[in-house]
Amino acid sequence: MQLDNESLKNSISYELKQFRIQANLTQEELADKANISLAFLQDIEYGRSGVSILTLISLCNALGITPNDILRNFLSQPTINDENLYQQIKILSTHEKNAIYTLIQYYNNNCN
Image 1 (cartoon, rainbow, N blue to C red):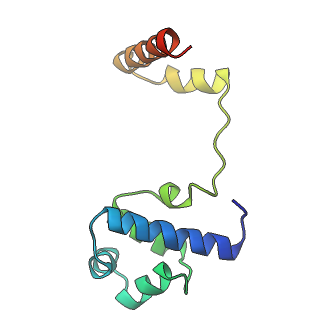
Image 2: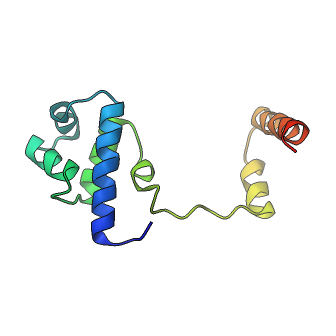
Image 3: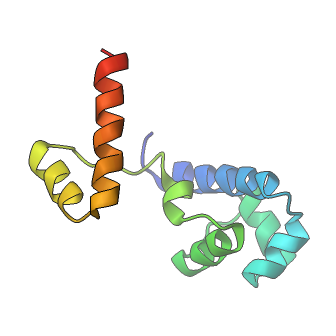
């Protein structure tokens, strides 16, 4: 997705509304939980206003999501290489490593 102010504002508006609906919250309830005015939330959802990082974080906290959930269309996916994967696995507990190993075995036996 192209990164410009208008695209970002429209995407944030759309994503926030979708997550609000998914959470079964009214605009009034979300505005109250995020400590912003109903009018401001409506302006955000209808794309008439952008949001500051602080407001975005407040809205995400109220929805039980992260800003990454809202901005996922604009974020690059991390490159996975062997060293990166090794570093991530190295910090797991033995139980977590066993779970990953079992998952890899299953994938290799059933998905190739």
